[in-house]
Image 1 (cartoon, one colour):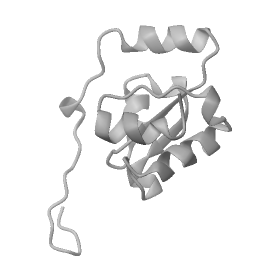
Image 2 (cartoon, one colour; image 1 turned 120 degrees about the vertical axis):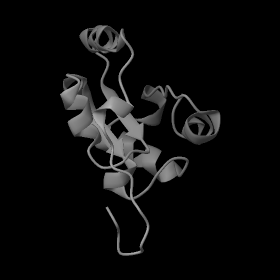
Image 3 (cartoon, one colour; image 1 turned 90 degrees about the horizontal axis):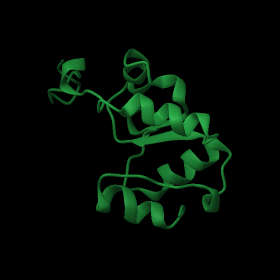
Length: 112
């Protein structure tokens, strides 16, 4: 679709991403052990809908999506906001990420 600025935006399609085969089993195990799970993601709108379509949304109490919040990683504010949404203190949180620059370094200021 063409935006006001004349820039073509990307429309996400489900075939572009798929969860790992053991994803649901891993999330179920963590959830069954009492862990509160959340996501901080630089995503297009609809992250919750995509998770629900895969049957994974029920495992997450917080979804901090850059498209919905208007801030993105590595801005430390998105980490602070996600912790507040989860009513979680930084010392009680663990960040798992796939990028050192975008996930791990910024989170280090707020989580272990």
